[in-house]
Image 1 (cartoon, rainbow, N blue to C red):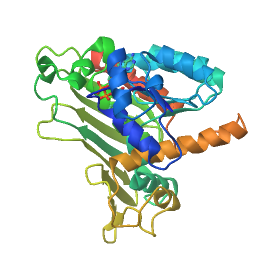
Image 2 (image 1 turned 30 degrees about the vertical axis):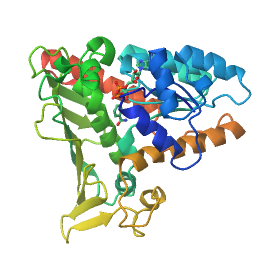
Image 3 (image 1 turned 90 degrees about the horizontal axis):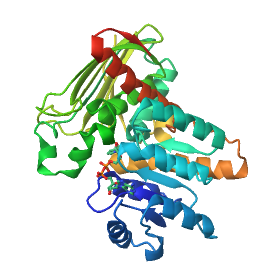
Length: 373
Ligand code: NAI
């Protein structure tokens, strides 16, 4: 793979690299790691790749790699949001599949362009909604699909972080700086950065679709130009209702993404800060705690485990599950260009839904009214 982003001091690029390589199916051999050619070279050296393959720009990486007999097979996008579309476009137009970080693009119009590009190219496109890679998220999804909790009536999903409680962007902190700049992050702040993860998790586990929402987006920290605290009431396509909270000013919170799904027969409770247990509570009967990797899980829940129960897996492993499925898809696609995406791997559809969620939330916030999805 060739990665764009992940330069010195970056957050998610290094996670992509470790996750992609975890199962020995993918190797990072090239990159345009920073918009600064010098920093890209530095990062290339730290990743121990051939110095000739640490490029000064993604355009150069794609052009030069296409000329090599051993050139990259796909492009990873781990850069700020406003660069996702141009990088994906350049890769797809060169015939290279894409594994992108979320949100798929910076704006809803952009994702519609991306949708056309991906569909016309027929190339694999994956989206790293990390939480979809956890074994117990897969287990919860399979339990919902099998009707184990009965028809879903209510979903409560929250994603609470505290790191932007203060005006971190004023200190020059890089990750904060671009996330609160609408020209880079897109018009959504917190709603795009983490609200999209919560939204994806809800639709991913329940298999339901949001059909309408009423959103309230606030900028709590003075002078901030994008939202940092969001609440959305949701209607789902089976008549259920939900509530989604996303906040980056929830003082003291770390990376608290949690979901509770209430069906007629039982409810499911999972949170990523304690990802190796899934609680099932029943209308009648005792609570059940399901443990990651255990033999009694659904086959979807078990199949992503790498180590026996009791050996904790976490963020890197969940990320690596998505890469493993992307590798499966790449291999199938090489043999048959019509090979479909693995149904458990988030991709283009998730990207379009997520961008629609941001756009609808912003629209609803203008008037306070419910908006259809
Ligand atoms: P960051 O600011 O830490 O790193 C971004 C990197 O991209 C930097 O090294 C920067 O130099 C590089 N870059 C910027 N423009 C570039 C260009 N034109 N060419 C090459 N490199 C360029 O940002 P962070 O936090 O790593 O986020 C990156 C993306 O990943 C964002 O879209 C974010 O939403 C997403 N993300 C996803 C997470 C997940 O759980 N899946 C978690 C964190 C971030």
